[in-house]
Length: 388
Image (cartoon, rainbow, N blue to C red; front, top):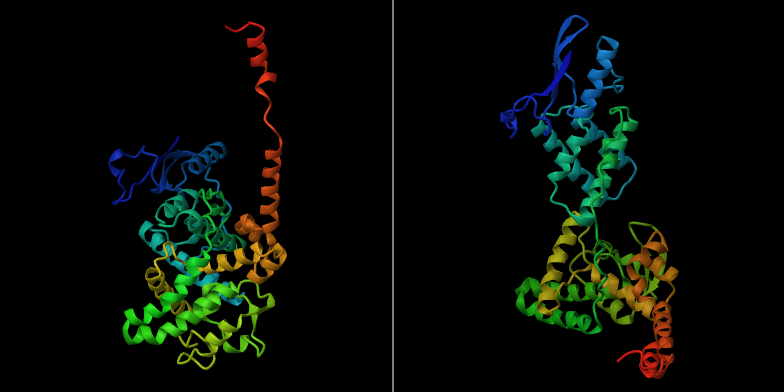
């Protein structure tokens, strides 16, 4: 007869509940006799259902049935290094590599605290506990879960785990924030506030005010993501004032004409680099983007624009195009989306043809006159004396 129990860790808050307590993630041990011999050992799992199935198989066979093990036991740290090396070999974008590295450093810290040394010690229950430690919510939590699934899929394909436990983690409920472009008045106030920026932030602010105004104009009239705008090289604008778009996410080449005011503002940007408008080309791009984001937040405060964010310039660019009658396909191409479905998801309400059709459908209902009260069943009933 075999009996299983949790062997509680010293820091387990349920260790005073006794060996029969099931609802924690401490390791499961077996105690009893099997085939006439005393048996006391760990089952190598924290999953109670899996442990019950294991001892049932042992009791039926009358002996310990060794489960098929992964091809090799791989340390968590080694799995992390191998995954990141493979990601770099695939030429993934630096922001993607950064997010993978950040997630796996958190996973390593969790493993160290939980006493997990090899990657196949992670099961569904353990990963649920790991996810509970995340501060990320909504879309950020969903993206992080997708990265975790990708990592364990890599481990499964390498033969380090028998299955991908992360696939059984349910995705969090998410809500897409509304697309809020800047109004024309807000754009005017933001551009005008560049002059106040130089007056409010001393010598450094005065030097950056001209570049900040050029960056705002570029964001408004190009729809570039903040990273693509900050790292824009001078050679990407030709003599005719066309911006050669080659977004980092899709790599699709497109030419976009820029207004003369934007081209002039960019040509007057000096003191940063001979190759780039807003970046030295030497620092980490993420750090450069962070610096400009802080400057833009100050600018939004000066312009009294609430909920200001650099990505709203991109929304403004897309909304203006769609309201001017541009096709969804062309807007999708200019934004660098991989599919028109992405463009439609965020900007459907700004498509001029659809809005005009919707308004026409509503107006057609106004032509139908309401029925006369003399023709209603209630009027007939009153006229016939059935209702007093």
